[in-house]
Structure formats: C-alpha cells, structure tokens
Length: 261
Image 1: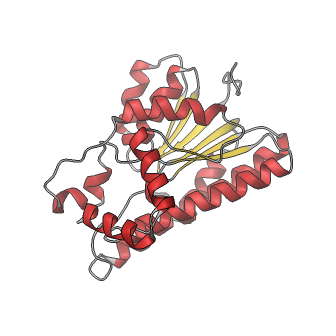
Image 2: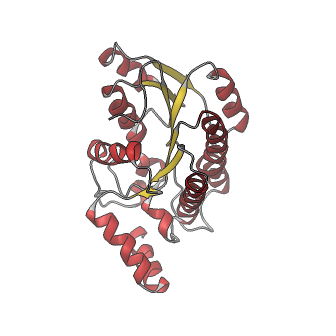
C-alpha cells in the first residue's frame, strides 16, 4: 500500500543532479512520482526525461546557498501539489579547522543548515494544514560524533539529525500524520569526496556502499516508517553507531581523526 497518491503529485528533491539526489529521482520516477529537481546544473535531469517520458520532471537551476534564491524557488513552485520533500543538497569541507577556507565553510553552513532548516519549516507547516506529507532530510553517519579534520561538516550534519528528531517527535506527540524522517548514509561512492577536497588529499580509494543500492534500501523504509526518527542502512554503519554510543569519547575522536587523516 502506497502512502502517497502519486498521480498529479510532485516530489521536491534538492541536490538532484548527482549522487544520492539523482538516484533518489530515478527511484521515485520508477514508482510513478513526478519530480521537481533542484540543482545548480540540471543536465542530468534533462537526460532523465528521455527515459521517463510518462513522468513530469520540472527542472530548476539555482544556487540554494542564497536564501533569496530559495524564497524565489518556493514562490515559483507554489502552484504544484507537493507532498514529499527530500532535502539532499549539501557538501563538506575537509581539512584542519585552522587551514580550511572560511568562505567555503560559510557557504556550506548556508546550504547544509540554513537552507534545510528553512525548507523543513516551510513544508512542515504546509503539510500540517492538510495533515499529509513527508520530509526526508539527508544527514550522515557523521552526525553521531564530532569529526576532527572534517569538523564543520560533521557539525552541520549533527544539526540536521538533531533538528529532524525533535520535529518528528513533536509531530508524533500531536498525532499528526506528517513526518520528518532523517536518513544517515555512511561512505558512498559519489562525487561528494571530490567537492569536499578529501579525495585530492587522500590517495586511498573511498570504500563505501553503491549509491543505487543505498537509495533502494533506505528510501523504501523512509517513505513508509511512521515510528522511526532516523534510518541507518548497512551493518557497518549500525555497528559504528553502537560503538560511538558505548566507547569513551576520547577513543571515538582518535579513531575519527586517524580515519580522516
């Protein structure tokens, strides 16, 4: 049984041009959803139209780091019937805190935190009016502990996770059918590592879950769950979460530092 009536409904996906966002679009298109894909470059979404001629794909190129662009986006799509939002846009800045570019970090905070916060509030209020709708926020396994050498990124994802859990708890306490579910991917083979500058400074290959496999496993659960506040996919990620909970913080921080270095 589907939670959402997909006919004439739209899903808003940010960061839709690559990686997790693009795979989320494909997953939803395969299930009959119509898409509003938001990215700084929509070339990949143009290609999708060839494979999904029966779906409607609205493509919007904009830089969501600018709050004015976000407000313009929301006004532009106000006529569409959106009942599912996936806040996926985001990136990281890797390196020692005293050496990383502060402007890149400020831009990252604008996108990872401010944009997601604004979108979540806007659509939560909108969905509550009809007592129907769901927001899926993309955090990370990085959200569960501080991250030496990836400090601002880990901190931004902790914000996403904490915010989502709190909002979803409020919704459940008020018996609302609206949900804010946070998904927490671990390492995944995408271009994220290139943009974060991690890969340029680390010659080892990124070992992680295939992005298609991750989205297929996680999104199915994220669309259905009414109880869980966040979702972890994969044995290793679940084990890491338990270890973070059990081990002294000093041991965890040393392990994260060594891994990032």
